[in-house]
Image (cartoon, rainbow, N blue to C red; front, side):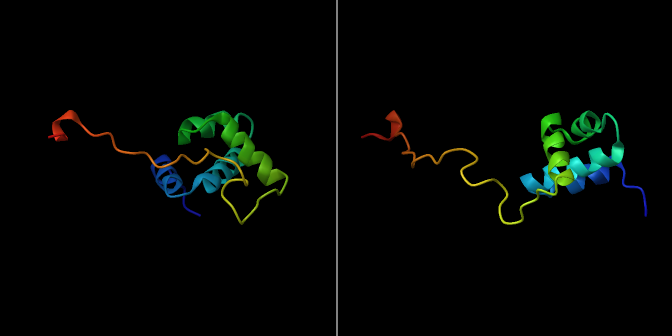
Length: 91
């Protein structure tokens, strides 16, 4: 199998969604071995905790296919924002 360089790895990583990124980072950390979480986090520009979480999910075989985030996770919905009118637009 051909070697995947840093450019190819980061280009591929940029195409993944949030969950896929976390799992891919965890997989690369497992392949790297000791210190892999920090090394991969620096290489891919993510938090080492995110890499560790992906690694733990893979090891525990706790990968859910239905959702990217757990139900209720993420930001709360914000109501519609009204556009403020500028003083210039008033007659």
